[in-house]
Amino acid sequence: MIGIKGAMLAAVLAVLSSPGAAETPDRQIGGDILRSGDSAAQLQADRDVLATGFTVTLDGMITQDGHAAGFAVGVDATTGGDLYGAGFSVGLRGTVGGDLTATGFSVVTGPGAEVAGNARLAGARITINGPIRGALAAVGGKITLNSEVAGDVLLGAETLTFGPDARIGGKLTYSTPERIDIPDFVLPADRIVYEPFQRSEIFNNAYEMWEGWEMPRGPTFLTVFGGFLVTLGFFVVIGALFLTLAPVQVRRLRRSIDARPGMALLTGVIGLSMLFGLVPVSAMTILGIPLVPIVLLAILLVWILGYILGAYALAMRVLRAFGTAENPVIWMRLLALVIGVSFIALLNYIPVLGWMANFALVLLGIGGITTALFERMVGNIDPALDVDMQPIQRNPEQE
Image (cartoon, rainbow, N blue to C red):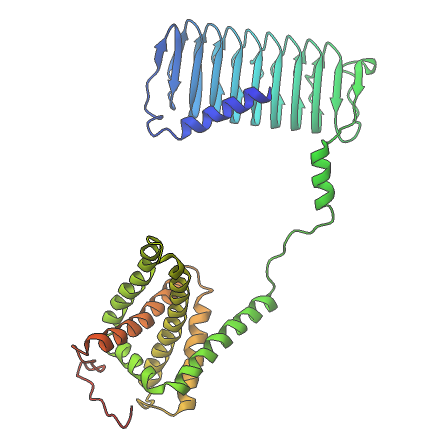
């Protein structure tokens, strides 16, 4: 039974990965009908039917055996031989002249789904409403029997229930975690055999290993707030070091971003793309492979510096709008850094829009750094402009 289940589930995967499965017409080979897709056309098969697809619907007449595999399988056809079904949900509403073998998360047989032979079922939820003239073997999480079974019955489930129409003509052997009371109308007590539900050794070992373990809990408010403060402190300390040790260079970078933010954003895209492009380029040569970790470290460093610079440039732009001087005292610049980094860090908690805003500021900062490096290499071919789009007159004494 396991082999059939594995084979049919493999067929499901093969069909679902087929790009043209939904439109493939029925094919006839040697009297058999091969159906691939979601067709619900009436069947008139002289021999077997093999059907696969996302939604499989069989209706009509199958002279011999029927094979159906898909996500949702529904069989309304009259099957003269055996029927095999596999899918997430399997529903049987037609009669079966031979044996029934079905597996899925949900397996349901309707009141009119009479099985002339034996039935072998496996699934998380199994509901049997149609009569079975042979024997029944079913294994699942929850099994509901609400029909007549002429032969012997073997059931194994976590939960086992019997409906008002349940009748068993042979012997019942069942396995559940605990013994249950079976109504007298189902069958006499002397034909009932209870076998304690036994887990496999592998399951028991796994259960013992995980027993007592608690599921991971989500972060608490203090954890999130603590992480926020640590991250904020890290960025502020790095930014404060640059403001203190290299104030002139930071001011030039900030002015470059402030004067032409659109160009800085575009330059940031180019600079970041070039950095990421160095990774595969370095890995293509034997001499370059040792440089890959250095390139990755450089990307991380530039990303952090771009984040800090973008947040600082935005904060200074806002403060200047409220009348702050172009080149304020150091404590005012540090305050601008703290405000900028704090505000941008809080934006991270806004899905999508907050992330986009953070990424844009990183690109602004990287654009300023890229522009500065380019000017150092080839010279300043395009002087920076102020907010009024006028060239900035640099004063060496202020810088």
